[in-house]
Length: 418
Image (tube, rainbow, N blue to C red; front, side):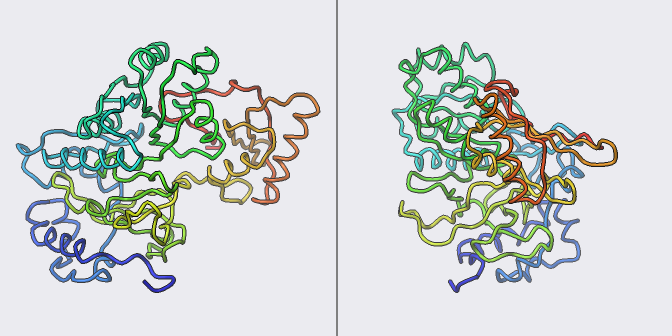
């Protein structure tokens, strides 16, 4: 591949897409309307494919409840919905093959993380319409490992079962993994915990948080990737050799685009992840904009599995940016500054207010520092914000454990201006 080029679509991927396109409009009223003015038989190359319009979450909301379905209702064996709390929900139908394919991908994730049938997989993400809990369970059962389907909450019971059943793998959001790690340390039961791996998903997390969880639980941590619209978690994971996540190229076709122009960017350049499903029957997705920000990691992986492209950890989302004092700020940038602030722990919360005609951004962060040491930490954080983002917030250190913990995803930025 020439330097600066975008990843090439494989012959197998192109042939799969062309075969799908041959009957897509017949099977899907959604795509018959979306591609009404496009002859899909004209898509013969990667360049042709990249001219197709994107699909976005708003398209799927407009198709509520089952307008996205590309199969008759009698072939739908399950539905899932995205975890968003606002607006019309997105409903995704699954056929029997979709569920089996998802299990295959998830089991592959476990295998790449070095998890085996002898492991006992402690599953804390939620069940129900959300794809998380049941996805982790499907993969465990496909692998042949013991699934312990706890779901979220009831930390006392979680820790009791973790000890009694000798769980070896923890599946959780980063927020809940941290909460469990803190409780284990507080109760002095680390010697009773048999965990060796942690599979973490559903929200981005910074390096300091990652280090705290790994150190306090004594585990290897793995980032699992996915979203409800495209199966759910399990379409990719990092391997034991590297922190970049392998994306299963036999099930999804990956592109990275400039979120402003929509143009595909060269490998290695940051942009927005766009995914196309290659085998999904119930709700195939063509060029779906995830709004997740990452980059393709070029070059081979030392694990030897080079048939699947790799993406970096998720930096953030193109729609979770806030603008303060004319500066565009992403959570990943805040987490990077916290990482380089000596004395600051991983947990933070940002409050943005408009007072007396100007924006005020307050960054609450946890720290063990007090008195003059706390002042030093706050000044260093303010200086780092000024140097890296050319704006100065109001840093406020609070004691460890003061900021809220969550059993699901933790909301960290509160914009009170609107």
